[in-house]
Length: 208
Image (cartoon, rainbow, N blue to C red; front, side):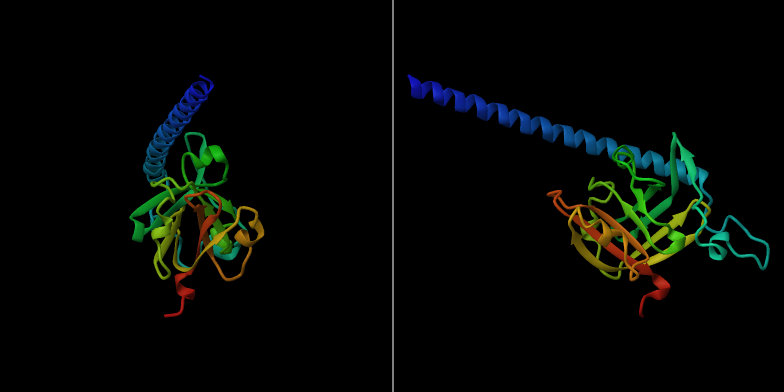
């Protein structure tokens, strides 16, 4: 009788664990679907408010302000109470994603975020969740692939992937510092234990 009770307890515990796992899986699916809808909506609105490349015509002889003063703050566009600095394009993955000005966990539920730096200073770091419609396919990118960032003023910065690596969550210094990369993209690995990191250099600086 005692063994039967123990067996019943084990069965009940197993069922509870199974239901919990199914519930968590269902939540993740809904969460990811919502994130995909959020980023698509934000991108569409950003393209409405941001300038198209070449749309801002400067008088002859003048150059963009960021080239004179790279420390200038990046321009931003407000959409639904959130601020965006531009969008990143990953042609290999058929992705174009808006990039928020500042990162936070709530912001990352909507779109990739600027984690550090500035595109004008050639040290910007962009982070995103590993949702399939965010950076979830970043492991499909390869060295030499093109990456483009377009700011809200229509300035276009073209890069090529130069290095792929994985960093631990506590390697913050290694993530944001380094003179060999002009742009960094990162997201969690599927296990969540490490950060899949993509280092990029300006295309004009890439050896042919």
